[in-house]
Amino acid sequence: MGNKAVVLGANYYIGLSIIRCLGEHGIKVAAVDYKKEGSYGFHSRYLSEALLAPHYKEDPEALLQFLIDYAKGQDKPPVLYPSADPYVEFVDKYLDLLSEYYLLPSIEKGLYTKVMNKESLHSLALKHGVKVPETLDVNEDDFWDQVDRTMTFPCIVKPTDSPAFVAVFRKKLFIVKNKDQLKEAIEKAKEAGLEVIVQRIIPGFDDHMYTFDAHLNKDSKVTHWLTCQKHRQYPINFGASVYTEQKYVKELYDIGAPFLEAIGWKGFAEIEFKKDAETGEYYLIEINVRTTNLNSLLRKAGLNFPFILYKELTDKPLEPKAVTRDTGLVFWYAFEDILAVKGYLKTRQLSFGRVFKSYFKKKAYAIWSIRDPKPALAFLGNKLGRVFRKIFKRK
Image (cartoon, rainbow, N blue to C red; front, side, top):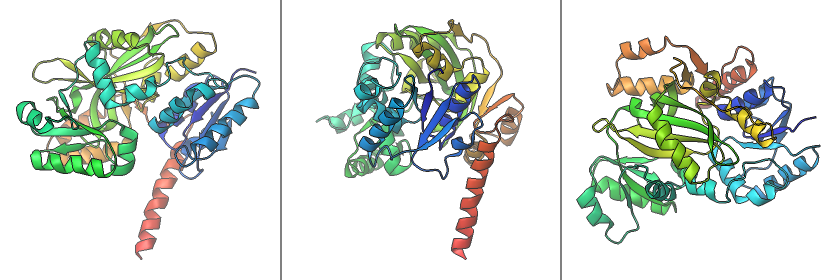
């Protein structure tokens, strides 16, 4: 029997996409989550085991022991896949111990966190000559003088630790239009015990957002890659992809590949860039260090990144490959795209005609699969259940 795969997180479509990417190749996949309700990935036909484990935040030590005990019961060490940022933080914290029982990219301990942290990523990018939006540290003694000298409004207040910020405020950042709002946003973050930075907004609509998705081998060399262009995101303007197209942009490789190689990255990474509408220059916005929401699109476009990593870690690496053409494929997360479109139309950033025309493209769905329909049905049932509970609660 070959190495199993263990996916951390089954209550979101990223975990589901990893399960499908591996299961379709006959790999035995176990998914781990802290509750059954809402974990629609547990319903996939490609899943071999659904495991309930302690919560990663409430009792990380117990989760660690759970994973170690599971791995000890296997014939070969499983390949471990965190499907969300909090799971990446958990893996990074216990990387030395987990690496004794699981197959993971042999990355430097702490590098996951360093790249996820906006402040340290900013420093890394500048060190290696990659453009980033002008950023101010709120802890500097002359911070307000710097705001007056260099910052324009509106600007954004971003967390250095995104998962912690989202957990508290249910949003990725604050958009502020003047100094009073800036002071208020900084104070809110301080009261929550969260570090933030202030950053210039790069001009350009949401379709100026791009991604460079890549796999780096054990020698930190890019072996597989492609690029994508966002069209819509939710929340609008500063959210996650809900409608994104695979689009070949060679310049993103020229910027992204040398940077990832220089910092010693291994495994999968997705760099998000924004193209300045005025200058045409690309600015690094953030890096996703785990499988992303675009995974079903990447797979359909020809690069199955979870499987590429599996083969690499089990010493059967695949031949290098890049998608150097436009496939016309789009990723679509219908549930949140409906909410996004409502926002774009309300603010007149998009017209109904433009939105309607965009749907006539071949799609890679976030949740739906004709070959694996049960997760989508479970997702829909869960959403309808919430609606009914709210209705009856009001009555």
